[in-house]
Length: 226
Image (cartoon, rainbow, N blue to C red; front, side, top):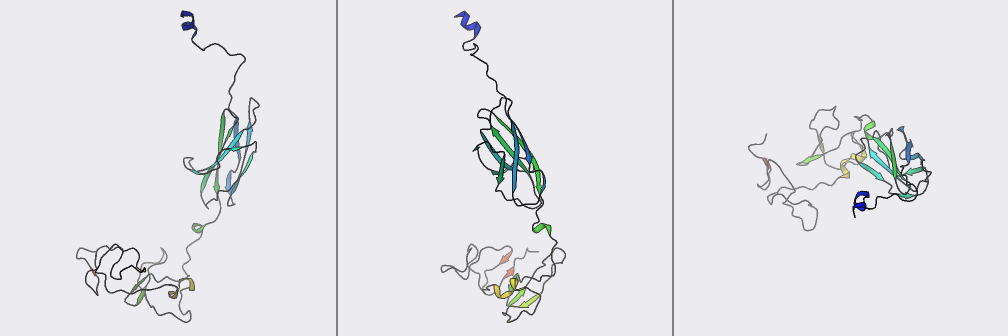
């Protein structure tokens, strides 16, 4: 018993030697600015033990590498290229990460890249495209400022459907594309999210703040409202 205790149970050398040396993975693409909606990820794989690549996994991460935006999952094979279906957003920064396994150990690498695609934020605000009528009160349409360059102002317009385009409002924003429902009584109060259903009540609304709606035929601001 003393001999076993000194030697340590199960500590004897096995026949032959067993080495573990993880594979080395280097992502070669994408890198730097990309001008396509998707990317092809490529990498190199080397093993000091001459073990072939058993599985690979491709991920697209955010720019700091903490959030996984796309994950291919483990894929069996020795491929060194992967057409990633993840659609990039213009002006964003990403990392492409590849994790490879030799069946025992794994190696990984990541490459930073950016998307040079144009998107909505890439264009200047167009101030000459007309205005949207956003509010209707007592048969009059009111519009707010459309762009940061324009100060807020009130302007009015008739809510009658025009037969021809006579103003600066494009057809996509024309008043005839909207449905206006009038009401003169909100005395049932808040909590009704949908007003155009068979079970809806014409005297109820969804939400208000600093408004007194409980006098039929009128709406007034509460005394403490600025």
